[in-house]
Length: 449
View 1 (cartoon, rainbow, N blue to C red):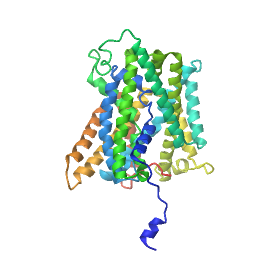
View 2 (view 1 turned 60 degrees about the vertical axis):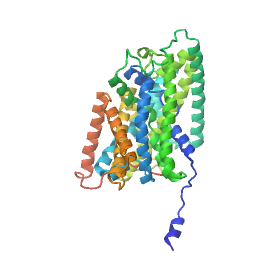
View 3 (view 1 turned 90 degrees about the vertical axis):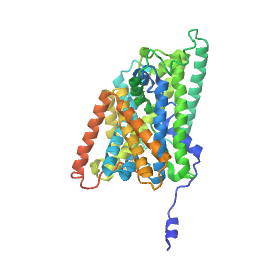
């Protein structure tokens, strides 16, 4: 039998996704309401300049998106910063990148449990925070133990519902501002630059949290095998997703800052956006936005827990961590049950210890390591090793790397110390598992269906 016949005997994924299908998928992965949950902590750190931080973060993510798109051409079946860095630069740096990403996966459910618990207290304040934490950690775990996975249609419906709520919010804000006698000529420029509060170090500290708005855009690269003309469309879709997300996020936070410019006076920093909605539209809009963000965050948290469970399963299957526990699969539903329960316990404990802000900063600590790694990998592949040197292959990855580095260094000291401690534990563990890095390094690839 010929090689051609052999290859045709295996089913292949259908290349049916267009450029705009990919962009829509990317927006759903990020969620149209992405800047709303962290709005309060960003505003507090950036002294009210949330729009500015969102736009600076967009610039950093655009250069990084170009690097992700280019690396997806080279590794269409992988889509992982761990792979890009490990194969293009050095396996040990790939390992550090993967270990940092593992922290991200475990922190996502934690910050979602924290935010959901705060939002639930807005609706039912009589129930204490710890009880809500237990409820949402148990809910995320129960959803994943039942093997429930959101379908594309469900995600599209949720995104459409969020879009309607956003439009309602904008309409109410316009009416509120129209009837506000305190509006003057400086009102509409103050969210971008307020001379009394502007501080570049604070702006970049806020930006280090604002990047949370864009987390998830790199997931587009995992769809490379199902895309029409992937060499062109994956790169374009990744960049366009960042642009659309940045524009929408900027409008959302700009509207919020116009309604509530006094960033020091939020009743609750973690759910500040909900209180802003209440000021603009009253109790009904407060509850509508609160409920919408609660549902969106439940989806993010349960999906994040599932992704983390699959990552731990992949590591357990490869015996990077104890295979008997983490590599086990519950036969009836085909899920890594032990990992789901383990992560539920981690989410419960973490939500009682960490604040939303520290959890978000730690997540971004690992994300920036991945972003810097992808930019460096793109620079090595398309400039250092390329026969033809072009400015287009030189400037974007270098700018992406150094902008991400500066923002990463702008994280608050507690986040940097805790993140460095996690990296140090990973290096020690990796050295132990590989006998001083003499054997093959651990894998951090998500298992593929």
